[in-house]
Length: 613
Image 1 (cartoon, rainbow, N blue to C red):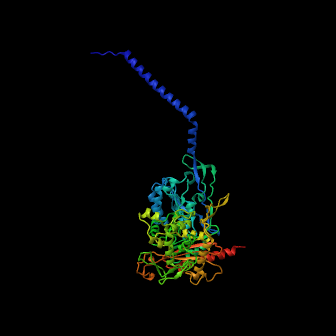
Image 2: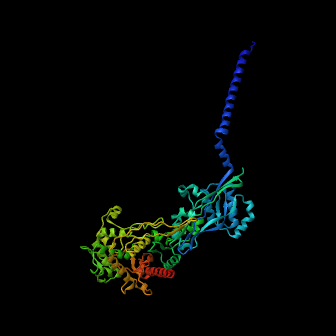
Image 3: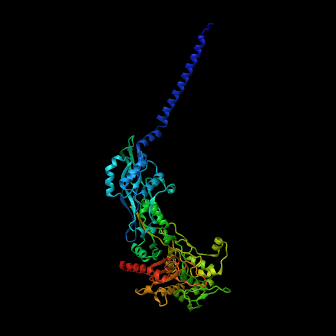
C-alpha cells in the first residue's frame, strides 16, 4: 500500500526547529554580550588587577636581627653570613635521588638529611629548604662543579645567628630556632613573611618583637615562566633593635668557672639599678647547634644527661633556702616584737615542742648555750630559729616573708620563671587537704620543709634587705637601641617594705659578723679586704636524716649530700651588689658557696673603683 507524504506538516515541523535553534543562538549570543560587557566595563578593575598580579611577584625582604651586647659592649648574639645549600622540592623531579647524590658528594651526615625531611613536611613545595649550612670552601667548590646538573638546588648567602660565648650565656641569652607549625599560627603573617627563625628561650624569646625588626618587600615583574624582569618597587626592611644588657660577661665567666665541679646557680644584682650582673646556671649547653637544627642523637644526649644542662637553675631551679632564710626570720621576730635584741634563748643542741618527744636538732651537737638574735644569725643557731618560728607562727612568717618576694615571681624580663613556694595554712589545705602542724612551722624557721626558692628570688630578697626594704625589681635589658632612637628599658615601679631602721641595723650587723667575726660561719672570705661584706651561709638538706641517725657526707652518695648556699651584699654600709649562690651537693655554704660570691663581689667593686673618676 502506498503512503503519501504530508508536505505541509513536515514544513511546519522544520520551521519550528529552525525558530527554536535561532532563539537558543540568540540567547547564547545575548549571554556572551552581557559577559563581555561585564568583563570590559563592570569587572574591568578587578580583572585588570588580577592580570597585573600574575605578572608581578612580591618577594619579602627579611630584616637583620638585632644584636645583643653585655654591659661592656661584648657581643652575646650576632648575625654572621654563611653559605647555605638549599633545595626547592617543586623544581626537583626525583628529590630522594638528589638527596642520595648530594649526601655522597658532600659527606652530609644522616642527621642533616633527617632534619631536612622534617622541614620538608612543614614547608610549601615552592619554598627553599636548607639542607646544609656553613658550607666550607671545599664543599662550595665540589658543588660548583656539578651545579648545572642539579636543577632546584642552589647555594645562597644567608644570615645565621651565632653565640660567641656558647654555654656561658645560653640560659640567659637563649637562642633562635626554626619557626614551627604551632608558632606560625600566632605570628603576624605580614611581619614574618620570609622569616625562618624565631627566639626560643631567654632574651631572644622575651624580646622577640624588638629583635626581629620589620619585614620589607620588593615588587618584581616576571614573565610567563616566572623569571624576574625588573624591580618595580622596593621597600627596605627595618633592622631589629639592638639590646644592651646589664650582664657582665667577665663576672659571668668568673662565676661559672668558680662553680667548678658543682652544678648550681649564681645570681648577682646591682642594687642601685636592679640590673642583673651574673645569671649563671651550670652546667650550660652550646646554643649554636639549635639554630640550624640540632641532631636527634645530640639532643637526646642533652635530654638524658643526669646533670640536666638544659634546665635553667637560676630561673626555674627550686631549692630549700636553708639557713639563708634566718636573717629574714630574725627581722620578722624583731618587727613583730616577738623577741628583743638582748633576749636570749638557751640552745642545748635540740628543740622540743611542748608535749612532744621529737628532737629538732641543731647543726652543733652540743648546742650554742644562751644566745640572742644577733648571735643566732652569726653562728646560724638552728635551735634559736626553731623557737622563734614557733613564737611567730606560720601566719606571721608567711605574711612577713611574702613582702620580700618569697613565693612570687620576681618580675624579671624573662619568660618561664618559677615562683617558688612560700607555705601557708591555706596552701596546705588546698594542696594536700590537711591542716598545718606545729612541727612544720618549726622547720620552716630554718628554711626547710615545704619552703622553696629560686636563686633569682633569693638574690632579689637579699638586694631588698640590703636596700633597707626598698624593693628591687631585677632586669636584664638596660637599653634598647634602634637606628632612630635609644631608650632605656621600662622597669616596674618600686615599693618599700616598712621596716624599723634599728631592726635592720641589728640584722645587717649580725650578717657582717658572719664574715668578719671569729665565730662567723664564713669568716675565711673577709680576710683580704678593707670593707665589710654582709652575708649568710646556708645548708639545705637533700635527704631526711632519721631521729637517732647522724649525717656523714662521706658515707652517702654525692647526689644525696646537702646543698651549699650563700647570700651576701657589699659594701655592707653602702651596698652596691647582692649575690645568691647555690652549689648543689656542695655540703657547706661557708666553704663552698661563700668563696664564689666573694670572688664576684671583690671583682665588681674593684672594677667599679677603677671606673670611677
